Amino acid sequence: MQLDATIPPVDQSLLMERYYRYHSKIYDATRWSFLFGRRQIIQILADHYTPRHILEVGCGTGKNLIQLGETFPQAKIIGLDISESMLGVARKNLVSMTERISLLCTSYDQTLKLAQQFDLILFSYSLTMMNPGWEQALEQANRDLTPGGHIAVVDFHNSKFPAFKKWMGVNHVRMDGHIHAKLTSLYEPRIVETPNAYGALWQYLLFVGQKK
Ligand SMILES: C[S@@+](CC[C@H](N)C(=O)[O-])C[C@H]1O[C@@H](n2cnc3c(N)ncnc32)[C@H](O)[C@@H]1O
Image (tube, rainbow, N blue to C red; front, side):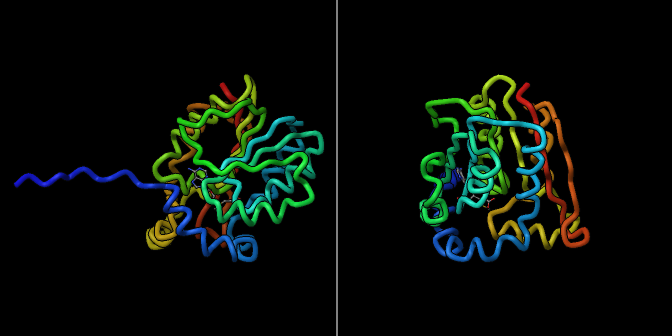
C-alpha cells in the first residue's frame, strides 16, 4: 500500500491563536525583558522620516502602534495581526487613539489586497514567527509600499547556542540569521545593526531599508 507522504500545510492562524490565547494575557508584562530594540527602531525612524501612512504587520497588543501614534501625530496607522486574542488586548490599549489607528485581523500573505499603499511598514518581532510565510510577507510589503517607501524591521537575528535556538523554536520563533539576506535583496539598506542581547546569548536585528 502506498502511503500519502504529503505534509499538510501549517495553519498559521490556528497555531498563533493557540499560542497567544494564553500569552496575550501576560504579553505586555513580560516581553519588555527580551524583545529589545522596539522603542529604538521607532526613534531611529523619527530621526530620519515623517511617514503619513503606516502599517505594522503583526502588531500584537499594540504597544508599537501607541508609540508610532505619539511619534508621528500626522500619520494614519493600521495595525494588522493574525491573532484575535492579541488584537483584543490591542483594542483596550488603543482606546484613546482610535481616530488615527485602526486594527485588522488577518494573515499578511499574498492573498491580501489592502485598499492603499504605505510609506512605512514595520515588522516588529513578527517575521521570525511567520514560518512558513516570512519571505512572502517581505515580498507583499514590497508591493504595499509606495515608491521610495521604507520598511523597518526589529527582530531576533541569530544565536551561537543551538539549545537556545531550539527553545525559541518551541515558542514558534525561527532564529537563524535568515531574514537579513532577503531584506537586502528587496530593499536598499539604510540602517543595519545587530546588537547583542544578554551578553551575546543572541543578536537582534535593526533594519531600515528603502524599496528598490
Ligand atoms: C512576538 S509578537 C510581536 C507583536 C508586536 N509587533 C511587538 O513588537 O510586540 C508576533 C505577532 O505576529 C503575529 N503574526 C504571526 N504570523 C502572522 C501572520 N502571518 N500575519 C499577521 N500577523 C502574524 C502574531 O499573532 C503576534 O501577534
